[in-house]
Length: 303
Picture 1 (cartoon, helix red, strand yellow):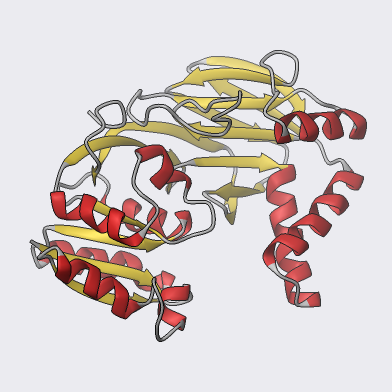
Picture 2 (cartoon, rainbow, N blue to C red; picture 1 turned 90 degrees about the horizontal axis):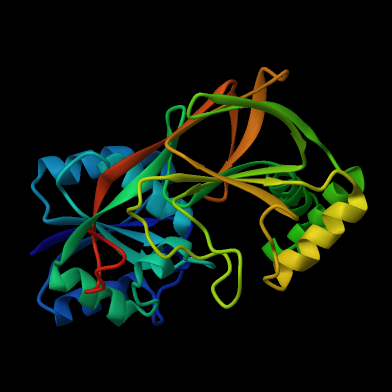
């Protein structure tokens, strides 16, 4: 088995010389299960070209090592093809790996890849951008932008900067005025947050924010109903404690295709944790079974 392993050059594996998730440790883990692995640290801008080269070179699997943003970039380049994606979850949250049931430790994830058991999962798409987890508009996108500015200005870590950014965003209480076309049905809304997921997300404990399936072939659209700062605060608290309820806190809809339009010509859009400025209207669609991925033997996660 020939594996091409692509790591984001800014990841801890590429920046450290030793340790349990270093480049050397990754090579050793693959060698231990008899997999020939070519491990490279590359920039985000080169990922698509490196994936194309791996596919042309007839790699058996292209492995993404990193957080959801890195995995998204590799998945986007593999979507629609026959070469499977392997996942080494090395990020902070690892939503995609968790929902697939992939172990979060290096040896466990490598064992899944070595077993070479593939399934197909859906991907979401907004305009020309792929997402494996979700996309959102409104307060989350604004908070991430503010977080990045705060980190650059004050040199804070990711989470302290996010806390300050959330406070500032909450104080402004920005609202979006949008027109939605959901599978041909039009509706106008005012909301602080629109969340579009690749398949359905759980709203209740103990698995709030997780997905039971990645192959149902639907987009999940959650619209926050809060229109005031107090309403947003209550929404945040209920989300933190896994007590969100449809109809009271969120309007939930499910669709194959969604168009989102607004009076703004461009909007900041969060896609798997990364922020892009995109032209409106935004066209969201689900692409059923578009991504082949190596998974553990767990039939409910892949078909």
